Length: 161
Image 1 (tube, rainbow, N blue to C red):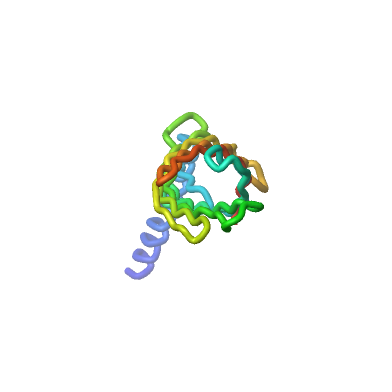
Image 2: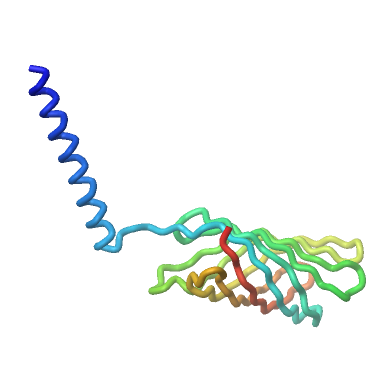
């Protein structure tokens, strides 16, 4: 009786392994595998048309789903008096396009200049290159709505962690 039980158990395990392998192959062949981006860190450089000055900064990309990501960032304006900087907490969305190159989003902006602080909102849209090891370039246009509304154009590179 125990030999029969062992044989049945071996056959059942074998069938389970074959079925799992077949399902995995169908999933890959059918293009149904879901890929979530890895977290990345990046550098950015841009131009602020309101201040009429170049800024530099960095960001952290934290994917929270297949198409969604959190993007905290900081931008510093070197050479301007009053230690001007902006901190952003944004949410980015990649709509379902063929390659997923385009994105748009919104978020919170905190501006600091000459001891004065201001809070506002961001609206942005951009293009992000396909995964090209070891970096991914991006180009973005951003509106910042606060006491002084500004338009920014920025570009940069993201490096996977």
